Image (tube, rainbow, N blue to C red):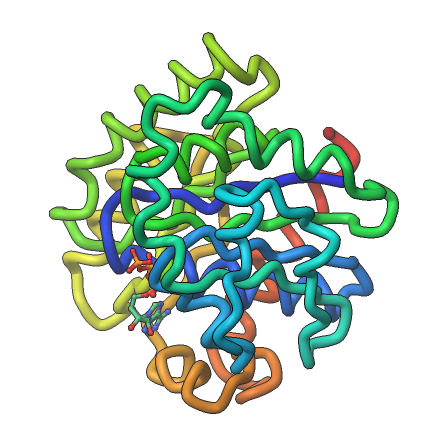
Length: 254
Ligand SMILES: Nc1ncnc2c1ncn2[C@@H]1O[C@H](COP(=O)(O)OP(=O)(O)OP(=O)(O)O)[C@@H](O)[C@H]1O
Ligand SMILES: [Mg+2]
């Protein structure tokens, strides 16, 4: 199982959109995906219309619950969900100072039968707190969605530093396997320049694929569908399918 954390501490960079739509596009290619919602805002859970009032992953972090008990099949082929809930709001405080708090998710994932899924995708909250650190400890790969706007680049150095610290102290396997330009508005020169800057600075770390700004992508959650099912001919669907291909290409390398 390849475990990929979708991380950026900047809010609204496209994490949830990428986690959900990449999961669906991988599912379309017959990959089995476990999508974990680690965000107290539970946007990925809501996207699937699966917010049911239960505690979800809170029980795993705060009550020693098992992942297996809360895994829910989604309506999307190949995709299972570990739901979040607003119970998670207080969990950063709750876990502060707890021994081993940063490795909870890693230990819980290890109890699952790894051959049941090809991918675990972890949708992180917009912080570098204990929940995101849990994702970085549990994952082998980090996918960083970056909004194609110059303001969005400023937090990248801090993110890379955090990944390096986790790598050094807790998870030597961890790699940033891709920076993904998101919300690229093809009509503006600015967005193109930001993508060029990213490619210049981070070279091969930037995916060939970029996700274009597409209103159909923004509409999809209201219909509880990933973009590949909501509008299969949209730019958004094409872009997330291309990303899935690129992720699959690297299966040989891991
Ligand atoms: N390619 C796109 N085209 C149009 N709108 C998009 C696209 N990608 C994301 N959005 C919109 O941008 C907003 C932020 O996206 P998203 O929720 O995925 O970001 P996030 O990083 O998960 O945010 P948060 O940090 O709050 O968790 C949403 O309203 C989403 O619909
Ligand atoms: Mg989100």
